[in-house]
Amino acid sequence: MDATLSNIDLQRSNYDVDAIRADFPILASEFNGYPLTFLDSGASAQKPECVLRRMDDVYRRSYANVHRGAYALSQAATDYYEGARKTVARYLNARSDDEIVFTHNVTAAINLVAHSYGRRFMERGDEVIISQMEHHANIVPWQLLRDEIGIELKVAPIDEAGNLLLDQLAEMFSHKTKLVSLTHVSNVLGTIVPIKKVIDLAHERDIPVLIDGAQGIVHTRVDVQDLDAEFYAFTGHKLYGPSGIGVLYGKKDLLNTMPPYQGGGDMIERVTFEKTTYRDAPARFEAGTPPFVEAAGLAAAIDYVDEIGMENISSHEQELLNYATERLNEVDGITIYGEAQHKAGIISFTLDKVHPHDIATIVDSRGVSVRAGHHCAQPLMDWYGVAATTRASFGMYSNKQDVDALVDGLKYVKEIFS
Ligand SMILES: *Cc1c(COP(=O)(O)O)cnc(C)c1O
Image 1 (cartoon, rainbow, N blue to C red):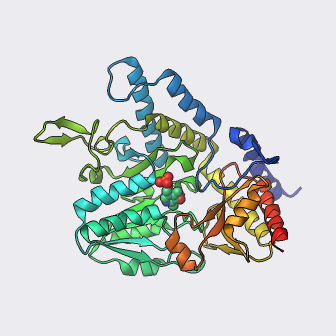
Image 2 (cartoon, rainbow, N blue to C red; image 1 turned 30 degrees about the horizontal axis):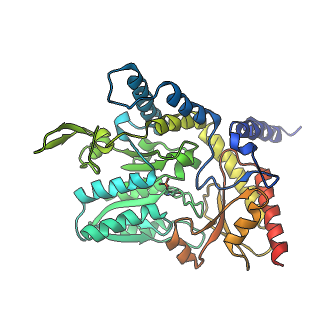
Image 3 (cartoon, rainbow, N blue to C red; image 1 turned 180 degrees about the vertical axis):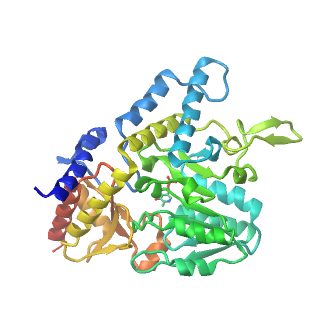
């Protein structure tokens, strides 16, 4: 027997996708008599049983407002919340729990940086560099800041395959550049941006970097000390956690130089009508009752991901991506957008003469969920000269049958439109 081959088989059988699927209750559903083929994890991932149970547990047994009461129930809820902060800090390899700010999603995290960091450290004429493949969440907050204080927004180019053009990005740096704000992984093209290189390049010029990790955290292992970015933001619901919770990692010294973004309860040291003083980070950025049940759910999701291992998840998704790329290319008239050197489990495509929305509707009749539209990246769509694409995106539970169901669905679409 071929030793190498058996090794590969062994590795494959170690990643037990069926066992993983069994942990996600929704995947057992049927739609229109078809088993659910969920290929929209890039928009939001499904939740494993342990996340649902953890949140249920907090609501049933440990529910009271956090940081407020001296009584046991409030302390139990606070323990869940602060425990979740520790889990996130450990997972990201942050130096301290104080570097983890809970927000409501990645959009809120980027807005926090734009408003707080931006208003404090930027002035008219200063520049923020983003890229051609940003999600609207990493475009619009900077435009709001531009309209308010007159900063300039510079856009780093990509090539046709969807690779960020690093040399051209580096040429854009100037003494006016106050921040580089980039996606880690494109939610449309699947491009894995070599952010470590970008961060090193920016740091040579003392330029801080924010990474939109909404997709990056889902498909790759993230170590914030190794990356050394000033900020890394992500959203819980794409990482198999609940909606309503996001994370802003920020270097502690930097966070403590930034003014509060929203004011209210819990973020203050002392309030009088004349003057209010603020607590240090992360508290100063967490005004009001935080999403503490969601934080507990996110911690359960991270524990689950960690148990399976992000490296294993990534290589499973990589294998699926290769399989899907091959199988989709069998379909006549298909164009795939995004052929970067390093890609995560996201495939956008168009089909000749069929509108992406029609594709999504028709395959949905066969239980296949895919996204159609501009994917909150209209400038990228404009650059490719398309109004919309259809997008299939994978999670740790996706399998080859999902890909086959999509390909069968597309062949059915072609029959209808022929
Ligand atoms: C989904 C996504 C966002 C927005 O996430 P929210 O949870 O809606 O804040 C931002 N950037 C990228 C790359 C995304 O994929």
